[in-house]
Image (cartoon, rainbow, N blue to C red; front, side, top):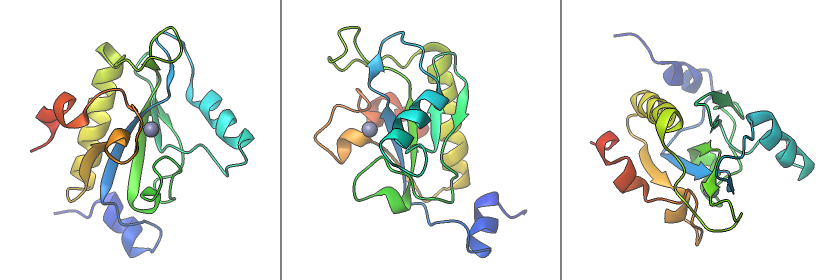
Length: 152
Ligand SMILES: [Zn+2]
């Protein structure tokens, strides 16, 4: 049995221990085509060292690489040091404020593939939505329902 990448990073002291995988939305309007670099720019302009998420699922299903996994993200207050943050573009109606689950089609497929991969890499980590830890709608759905089939 080969060592997993996460184990290697733990042994070298570069990896953090991961307890949770947390799903977010970018809270951008349905259909608005924002990419990972734009989110990174927003977060850098806030004075952060890098984009707050580890992965961003763009509208066409592209998986954008955010902050390196071995570094704590900036996405869920109190849980950043022990979690991975995965964000999809969208999550709000065209009015710009009403929460809406806009994660479907290729974008949904990509998110599921990413989450499956991360859950295989970190089998002890549990899967959550931001709204389980904050009084927010993010990611505009209940992770335990939408991704029920991924949670075994
Ligand atoms: Zn969030």
